[in-house]
Image 1: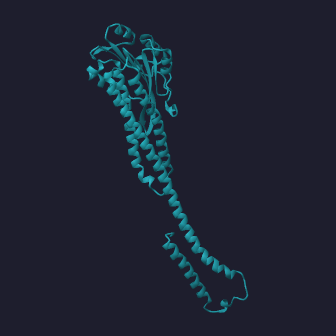
Image 2: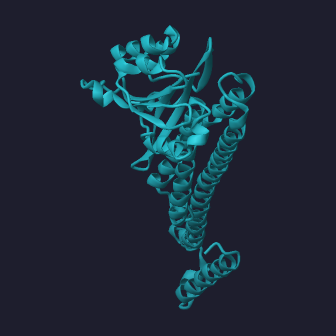
Image 3: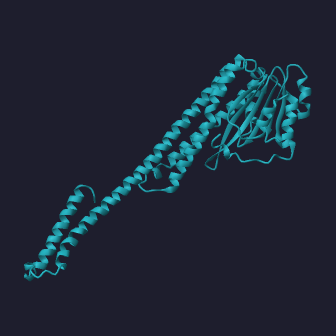
Length: 340
């Protein structure tokens, strides 16, 4: 995906516990059974009416292969989850889904991008984070506060994660809008500021990449509601529609912000060009006033013998008066036309 090369390759942590952020079992009523070790997942799933929610951060190949064994995940999905350079997409593998979502965080005025891979089955939800991404612990806590909805299955947990990801995109656009307001003084200055123009360009580039990350989410969420009733119960359609609405708002905000940035760049360059034109007009006006006495006095450097006015005692003051009148007339004309 264009622009996603900003995901820096991260060395997998040596400690497996650092890669497993959470691994929790849930009962049919949506309450926790407690933390579960990776090796004990199959034991939990042997109990009826339970499901497991696993959260991973930068897992290595061995851990992913272990999860593949526990949940019978597809080889292609595991291969994609291991490499953090996938486009936003949804894939169905039998009775399970594999979803790739782009994430974003604002770091030092620039957007850092990451990815989250989600595996959804009837009795499990696995989230795999790569690159710039916040922890999904708040999403998990929010879901656990609504056990009646979590009782609908792991799809409610997936809703919580998707909603958390989308809700973190809109503040980025708001921060850019506030920064643009702070740059207005430089934008409307009639002088060229390379740093201001470069910052506006960088913001526009980041927002374009953010839109490429957010826009496909609309199709992903639509497919979740329309094509997978075995995993997404009807009771959750309203919640996924809410996420879809948030994604639409984010895309609209990004589009509006990009237009504002384009307008700001155009206005800045137009004002700079206008200021340069004003300077050129003034320089041309002063050049015209200097050209008049230069032309007149150059006549007396041609060494003609018959210049009758040279023999008169008033010739020198007369020439000075003529030059002054000509220059004064040019000054008045240029002043009225606002060239000076």
